[in-house]
Length: 310
Image (cartoon, rainbow, N blue to C red; front, side, top):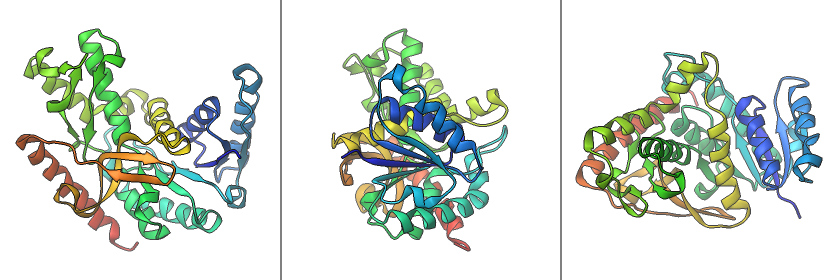
């Protein structure tokens, strides 16, 4: 039986995600939005590409949550995007209300689904979804680190003019300026990154990665990144649907790992058919541990702010 995947929010992120899900034949897709006609039109547009792209996944658009009933996975992209000059944190109050309402409606229809949260500020919105859904923590996942890691790998490949397939790199922590690229374990063709680039160049790549989302927002003027975001979402979904047990960086609930209790933080996690099967504790240098503590404190403050009037 085909998996049923619902994508909440049919804007650029949601629609591109739905298209990639169909292209990768990961399941039947429901694209939901409150704007009448928009999800239906985009779903029809995607479906009309199926003879060319050779997929038979059903793609429907709807304004009715009942159409999402019994979803195996629900991806929540709904929320306002950033504008130039805004940080992700600036969206906390408005998107908290949106994610709260969406989660309430989703869990009524699909009480056994796995939730993947994409809305910003990511770490706080994962907390909102967890509190509202009351789901087991393994079924609540925040998409962030997979995207941030992809950006870092791309920047390194461009700097060295080498295939992205030769680059290994991972980014942990909150989805914002305090994220922590693990340079100590980054590799180029199996060798430490430090053998290929001087520290000054590496520091610039780290800074660009931390501000990569804002760079795209400033260029687009309206809206934020969606092609790379949709690809990152699809990698998470693929590992879950096909029980691949890939180790991917994502916002996962920490219950003592990394010395953190009761927060959703970006860490490597093994993803399979039940969601998060295991949080992996990466080896951090003293400097990386110090940076990780800073990002944890930032996420903690943001989470505390989110708790107000939830």
